[in-house]
Structure formats: C-alpha cells, structure tokens
Length: 301
Image: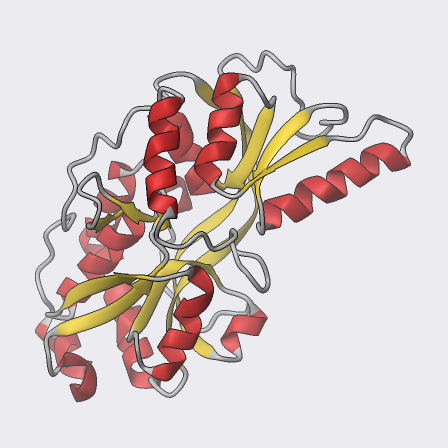
C-alpha cells in the first residue's frame, strides 16, 4: 500500500519490471498463468459514453499513467512492453464501458499524480491508496480495497506469529506502509524486553518474496493482493499467514478540475461491478478478496 507521501511502495521505475520477472524465475515461482490481454469483454453504455467530456473522448483514448512494477496490479508482460495486471484489466473494462480505449504509459510512481495535474495523463491507475493528502490535489474514484497481508514459507517452518514476531526475520519493501508497520512492531518487542524483529528491506517486492521462498527470511508482509498473488504464483512454496488488516480503498486519480469526468468514471466502475466483468477480472488474478460493492468519488481518506 502506498505510503502517505511515496505510497504503497518505493517507486522503482520501468526497470523494476525486469527485476520482478528475473526474481520470480530465480526463486522458482510460476509465471502468470492467466492469458494476457484486454481482460473481460465489455459492452459500451451509450448513456455513460455521452457523459464523457468532449476533450477526453475526442481521440477515443484515455491516456493513463501507471508505475508498471507491481504485480499483480500493473506490471510488464513477458514481451517487455505490454502492461498487464488486474488494475489494467479493470480499467480496460471501465474504459470500454465508456466506449473508449485505455492507453498506458509507464512512469515512476511519484511522477504520475503531477502528470495527471499537468494534463499529461487523463487518469492515474497505479494502486493509489486514497488518503486525505491526495484528495487535496486530485479527484479519486474508488474501485478496490487492499490491506496488509503476511506470508511465510509453506508450513511456516519459522513458527512465525504475525501478532508476536519478536526475534524473527521479516522481509518488506522499502517505502511502504508495511515497513512502518513492522518497525512499530519491532519497537513493541524491544520495549517489552524481547528480541527485536530483524527487518530486511528490499527495493523490489519480488526480492522480498524471493527471500522468503529461499528461507533467508521467515516471513514477509505486503499489500494484500500482492501477498495473495505471490502465494498463487509460488507453486506451493508460500502460504498466507493471518488475516488482512488495515484495509483502505485504491482509487483512480483524475485532475481536480475534471469533476464531470471523475463522476462518469465512478458510474462506469459501478456498471462493471453490476455486469460481472469486475468479478471476472479479479478472480482471474486471485485478488477477489479486495472486491468492493460500490464505487465512490472522493471518499474520506
């Protein structure tokens, strides 16, 4: 989950996608077995399409900024250029509902919201957690809910208790709310006279995952869809530990003065929830646990 400033994770840039694929292969994880592409086929809603501002629909395309380094939400396919993931398939469905096509441009995470504000991108789609600070600068349309999820090697050989991980070695990605979480947990350990948690920080979430698969670390914690996807792709080498906690909504980012466009995006999200294409996309990627039943514009962050 993106931190207050930097967000769910540190921005790694486009090169992070290569790290992801190499790391998964190195630790024996399976590649995504879902078929890459546009995702579920969606029929345009002419009434919704008519509400899209002329400036947006003139070219038939929604220009999207995304940090394509975060499987399973948005990452680069094996061809080295196509952006895939559940975020992509969901937004493709939303765009189709509006009679438009989404075109993705990979960018560092911290460049996306400024790009939305400048008009370079018409929408930011990159697992943005909705919070009060972001709502000061952009409109946000909710579409998914994610929290924190722990994972261990199959069978939990390290005997990790996520409520009491004192003395354990835990992998986490830098710049994430999970790093803040595990740091606070470690302090509670030492304040109580118990051994500190050894916190191993990695630039790429895929490297944190690989550290648990290899046995270097006892456990990891990450955004709930990331943890679920890692387990699904590990070929039985990993398992989830405990329940998802501290859930918060993800949102599409739209320029602050594009209120009408944000409103119709919200209606389009609701439409794909209603027609079942939303559920289809999430189930394909194994992240249906984050499904929401309704979309909101600028919910309290």
